[in-house]
Image (cartoon, rainbow, N blue to C red; front, side):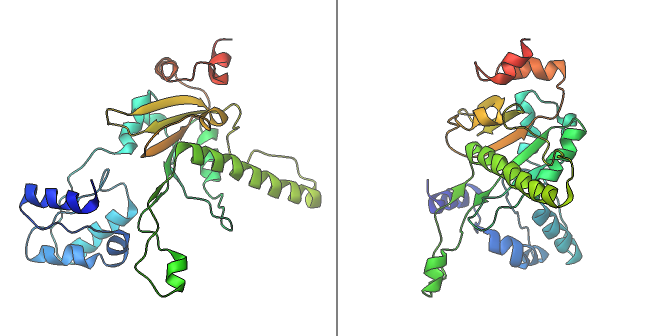
Length: 262
């Protein structure tokens, strides 16, 4: 279904006008959402749990400050559904977001959070980038500001590749500093692509959901199919129950499985 047909079906179901709230409206023109609530009921429908995103919490606060009554109706979210793979939710640390790398922009700011989690024997849930209504810079240069690139959804494979690249970038920086200061090499990321267990989650909650566990390097070559994807980097030692459940999802010849059998 395209976007217009989905809107029409929702309007027929609810008997109300449905407005597609894109990133610009939600982040820059949020008053279009909460100001009408002073005169009637307005519902903001989001994917996932509504209070897991800072942007949504900001709208909630601004609506209350504007004099609106606000009620939150919770929804299923990857934050809870991630436990489907068998990893226990109370063993998770900080959640991180992995953005698409660009030729001149390759941030590594999420790596210290992974390191912090790993040092505390905690798992890291990685939320993967989504690009929707991304401006076409070439069209903008020609004066066409309403042209957008096709939607992009980061795959688990891309996330693993970028995590490997992020480690290489930080190691290079460390080597350059060592040449100047002769410091000892230290772990800057908290994971080893060749040995660290990761879990790829695709389309959780759907009939076609896919859960695969293996090392980061092994997941590079797994076909996870259509979006949406998420990734978990396992931290340190796993609980016996976690290990038992993960065995079902671990690749047959995974290095992780071989280690566990010894």
